[in-house]
Length: 256
Image 1 (cartoon, rainbow, N blue to C red):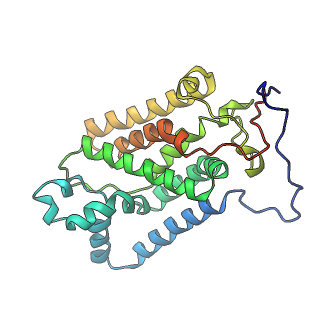
Image 2 (image 1 turned 90 degrees about the vertical axis):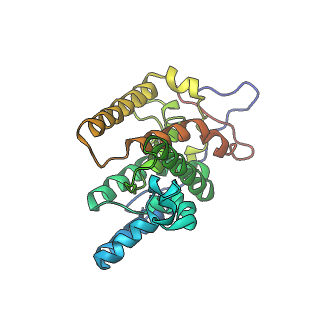
């Protein structure tokens, strides 16, 4: 266990085991966010199809909306503004929703434990916004609506690899709880690519999304791979601006 030379050794306190541990060990903000995504999707299954089409028209992210002609057909200026956020809360089916929920539980929880609920939500929405920006650039003028929290979650994954692999083990500190997650030092972007585990993670993620992109261009497809890349790049580069310093009188620790 190594410590910064200028800081006295200090390990994070370990809370006593709970007599009634939660069924899902995740921050409340993550559970509430997943609950909100689920409720919205269930409501969309109940409302008439015509109403759901209107929901997509006004709240999905549609590149054609930002053209002169499209602005008058896809909800106008208000929808052009709020759809940068609202599209994250809509999903294409229960499978889409469940996959995103599982990934958010895994990686979003680590990020939320580290930065807290407000910073977590702000960071996630910024990543979602960059996902929409990449989709807009690559699909300029296209009338195809984009929905789903995948860009936010891609950003959360990128943020998590900047600290979870600083610890030993295949998945590093991914399983740590609130009491320890904030004490793992944040890797620089350069260090992410120097570490074999985090580099392998990025490489595998990139290959998968490259394959999705090539498949979409060749055969057509409904996966917005551009948004995945936008969210991931934003998460990797911008997470440091959302990452708070360690609590007072506590230093970072690094297990080697």
